[in-house]
Image (cartoon, rainbow, N blue to C red; front, side, top):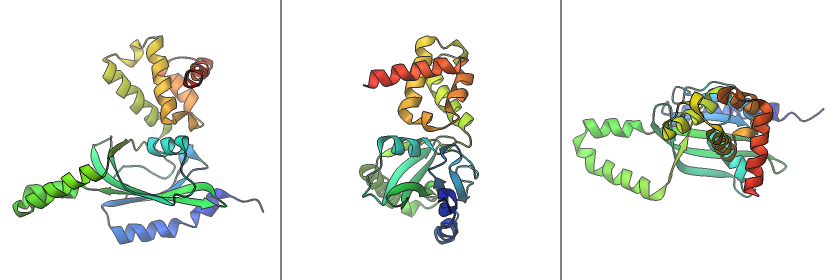
Length: 225
């Protein structure tokens, strides 16, 4: 019988349940299927933190990691910090890499909402010094990585395009050719075009043809080389 990576990864769903029970409601636990990036979320617990559902695409952090490559000897990454752009929650995250025969098939990600510390800071005066020291240590030890937790490919594209629109001070429908090229370049660097539905979606948003998107991509790749 042919090997089915998705069915193989489903064996880890009890681990997702275990971690959710162990770590409590402030930690979101996600099982990613990296063989299906367009709908990579295979299982998720405590999803109120990022409001994603099963079938959501891989995050931009996951896409960047895949594009730049994950060291074969690396089993997990712990303690990196992220900001969920949707509501600016600051999360502390960790990822465990799931491999079979040295092939990376999936990830188990833990995203812990640290907003409870802000609440404690405002209600327990005696903890103020401890919390200030905690924040200072965390800032020194870990870099903050922005990560957008999108529920669909469309939403992921919209987030990036709107960020560029705001930074430029130009509405998307007023983008000139160079603005659209820059958008394609930013999305390419982020790994967005690893998603199967990326080209038609960005063509729709920028109001250009799919062949134009492919032409821009060729120019971006040539520029990199």
